[in-house]
Amino acid sequence: MFKIKLLSLLTAALMIFGVFGSVKASALTFTPTNGKDSEGKPVPISFYSKSVYMENAATGEAIVDINSEEKISPGYLNQLMTCALILDKFGGNEKKLKNTYTSGDSTCFDDLYDMGAPTADIRPEEEVSYYDLLVSMILVSSCEAANIAGASIAGSTYDFVMMMNDKAKELGMENTKFTTPHGNSPVQNYTTAADLSKLCRYIINNYSIYSDIATKELYQLEATDIHEDGTTLYNNNYLVTPQSDYYYSSVKGLKSSVHDSCGRSLASYATYDGNTYIIVTLDAPIEKTAADQKKGEQNPNSIYAYDYVYYSMLDHIHLYDWAFNSMVMTDFINPNSEITDAKVEFGLEADYVNLKPKDSYQMLWPYDLPVDDVEKKVTVYKNIIAPIEENDVLGKMELVYNGEVIASVDLISTSSVSRSKSKSELKIASSFFRSMEFRWAVFLMIMVVTIYSVGFFVFLQLKYLRVNKKHSKKKKPTL
Image 1 (spheres, rainbow, N blue to C red):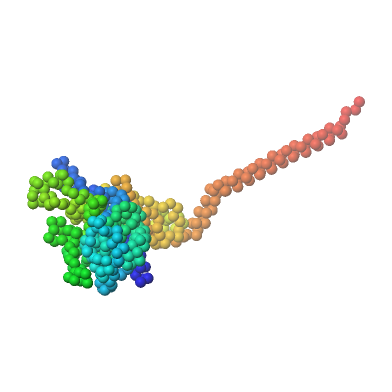
Image 2: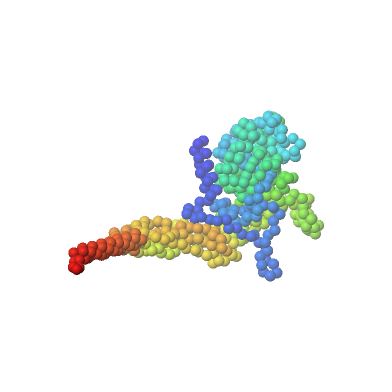
């Protein structure tokens, strides 16, 4: 168990901060577009969601960022954390999840009665597996499943919420606070799209079983004493439902939410051309807009003709369409290319070394943005003194786009240079004569000589005067 927790912690750290080696990347983001206007200018996509965040799942680099740091109640996306803690407890082991049963007493239902909370119809004291609790949350946002799981794992839902917030801190979710395992109570329960993306990245990089569940169109819960035929649950995320108008074959989950107080929210991820994208959107409208009402009247066969339009899903579809057609993994730094050279003091074999990037750097880049617009700014450190070892860091190269540094990589020596003893001694000697200490020493010597000379001169003058005085006394005039 300790090894599993340690591995989980290390993996989380790598997934959160990205594995860039010496490369430091910034949060350069792009504006998704859909076609061009009459003047040939790209037309930005208009999103329904209040907060939109898209990232490269492999690196954690942001691709699209619209109000991603705004604190918003996530609704039932809150249950992503509850699911993560269940998976942590069982290490994502499907067999253990299916063979371990629990139940909840009436306290797991007290804050849900008459609250309009989504349910999988699990009853007090009904024995269910942790796997079925996971399915109930992922597919239909079952609030009683969240409370039962929390109370069973931590002893109480209160203590479980503390675990949720501790996990959030571990994952670097700095703008998140959970107050319930289920998310039905939005008061003081908030997060950001950027924070939830970190949680999604943690889940998909550690627990493949989550995606297996999240892509199910429907699932039959195991039969119990109360539900002898089990309970059939249908996935509320229509992006993974083939019969739906919103079906998107590349999407692999993750979870949807509809809440009267915080609108429609959705977390999903998809892979295309070897690149995996995570999208989190928060607070899209529940009711159909007036403009879309007219669209439905004009086109009775469109999705706008239905009573509800699932705006969060539309936002995800538009983002994936744009990314799949526009984003290309682009190489910006070749680690085998020599960039510049650096002057080396006291070198025996040479007075300089060639520098190359320590690591490569590539990022998803819109194909219609010229790569040549990215400036490579090279800085070589000053006062480089031998000995120099191969791979010593002697400078850096920054990638600058529109005045913003988008990445920085160390520049390292391609060879070694040993120290020349004679050059260093000569340099030390010559530098001494140019040093301030030497100048002060010369000044003091001149001052001493000057003072001595002046003093000696004064001494001679006084001595001469005394001698003359004695002579004048001996030669008194006679009368």
